[in-house]
Image (tube, rainbow, N blue to C red):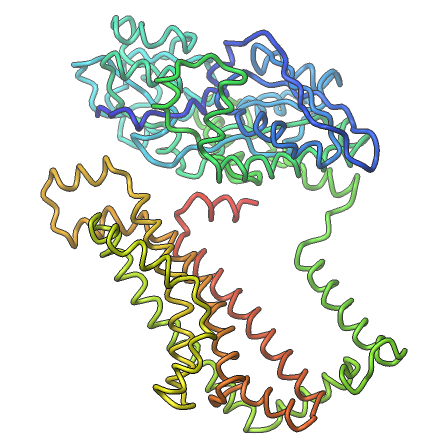
Length: 590
């Protein structure tokens, strides 16, 4: 099928792809040294292709400097030059596609992957690499590639391995495909001139081929595994043993760079101008690769298994030899997990609150020691009054959040889908949104007294804007090409919402839900405290008024624990609802 050009690929596979192309000129990071001393100089061997954009962006943004590294980017002709330079110690780190690393490891080279490079977009027909055929070809799908000549940039590598896999999946004979080696820059002309039956091409050459009339018949990466990691950054076992701190620093900076690239696609595309000479029109047409932090171990195994099945390897490759965790942990020790650091922070706070009043740093009448607060909490937990109040708080919170979510999503989709309505309501939304909910307390009491309805008014008012604004942003982010296509096919309004608007808006709506959940809890407790609505906040106010200071702090602790639980639940729901989204896949991989 033919693609239109806001949708071309982002030369990601160029990682293996342009392994034959190179460029002269080195790039060095800018910026000053950190205050704690001199930077550690490291050299990274790279190929001047789209795939390494996050690295250049990370250097530009100072992420490597923040980790104490002075990075020099050494341009090379391909992995064949980078691998020996890393093994010899000339470069500390390098970039290569995963299959090439597996090949090197199978030959006994002491390499370790340390950070992800890039991933397939996971969308067939809209990936950075694809198999294309000349205009008018009788090849319609991957199975038709059997007994045909297909150009790849390197034989017995990631290109022909994944192509044989999709041919096999499609019911064709993978052994019958005849591969010929050809540089990516030569492929568009070769396809247009029908010198080959098909070619596997990556960006920016894929866009050029499509502009010359070529047609995509298979997105071999996306169809092999929609979460396939294509390339990775690597180092040597010697480097890990000699300088594990530098390896950890590089990995941390690279992960931060990948996350930043994923969150700032325009900056990632713009940084290409600093080290490539891609035509501006082609650059804007390309669909960039997916970037995400965290090595995806399963991708190594997928490509190792395919390589063994289709003849790239004579025997099974031990994927564990390439993965860095054991080596890094032995040499430098595992970094403390985030949850452990969080618990350490809580323990420190509890210790300070315990010691401070006993040493007279603060008056124990106003801040009792931790032990007294926890004792009061244990006592409260044994009373029916506490559990009744907790149930009332949760009921108010859930009710307010549900109203806000439904109203925010429905109105957001309606307003966002109608440009005139969006324009008419914009100023009103911007006026009302910043009004503090607590300013409505007198109005709430006047209308509803001190019952649950008063607190609900505050909760709904504050939470509604969190959802509405996010949903409006999501509707605005819908691809105009997709919208035009839906209209062309005369989709009904409900079908357009279900198939076009909602998939784009859902990530925004989940962010709105997460924000609204926390805001709703804050306003629930605030309303109970100030209005007197039954619940934990009302018990807190009663304890304060009666001088039961330890009990008051116990209720504060309960409110804090509720906040943590709400945030955890919201994040779990978000990850479950968005399991298909790149941001969540990247988070899991990390």
